[in-house]
Image (cartoon, rainbow, N blue to C red; front, side, top):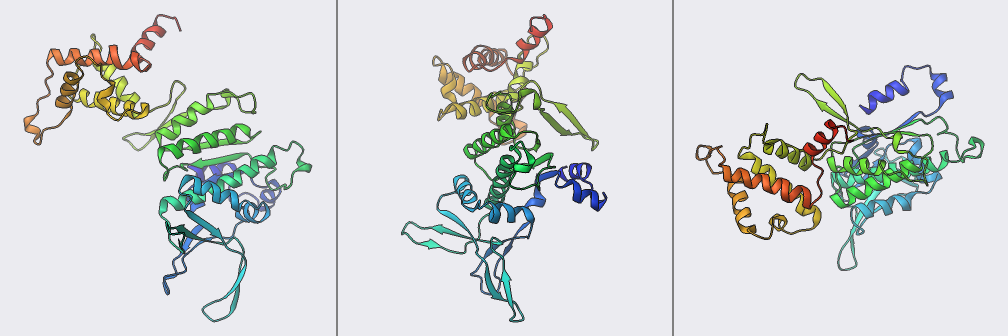
Length: 372
């Protein structure tokens, strides 16, 4: 999708002179960005493993001209481990296969070491795919920070470089695949703050990660007088692939999507006395909502969210109805009236009011009555 967008903004078949005059119109972070980095595994000696960088103007500018090496290392260690250290090379001369001297440019290779508990390090290690992606993101993010700083200088003649004067768009595709939830949230907050600081650039961010989406959604809904960014400048959309192979693009103006919120809305439909139809699987939904809510609130057990009185009884009922038997033939879908009453009570009287979930049914009724 980012490549298709690039072709719309800066098509390859455009006149070369026009492209040269117009300059860079789009920066993007995606799988092609990661392809600029590749491993030399030293298959002969199996000792000198290096993460190599394809020559390009951007990494040269951010590493050599801007001296961002330390910031990249700091970002990377923050998201991974302070014991894992990347090291960028200085220029050196080596021999090729024909024993001829070749010059290796500075900042074209990265080696990694990891500190041990005995004050020694293991050198020339190969890092994981997730750590690779994290490092590449840190290089891109450091570049992006510098670009925003340059373009925020109002007068083009006063900028330290003119190569980004025509930049219009930044396309970022899922930079969080390797991060745990805490670092993912922090990355999303930092990215949102950088975007708010930028003046005039347009950003497109795509992700499969609901948590990353939710944090960005909430950050972009928070106006901040310090920045150029306004809430109205943010557009949120969900792309869904349909069974016929086409795609549906839906606006997400109301609230961020998250799986447990979807389950809760399905439970509200099921317990609706007029149109609902409670099934056994709805207790699976209830348990899932309780588990995610308890994790978010810091409880070690989801049953701690249940009412103190008769907690054990509620817990046993949910467990019995949400657990699967070994054989499908042993299961029945019929839910007795008492269990239906319990489900309605826990949703309407405990979960929604106690933990302040928004009730989709109540909101819909309010809107229909014209009070919103």
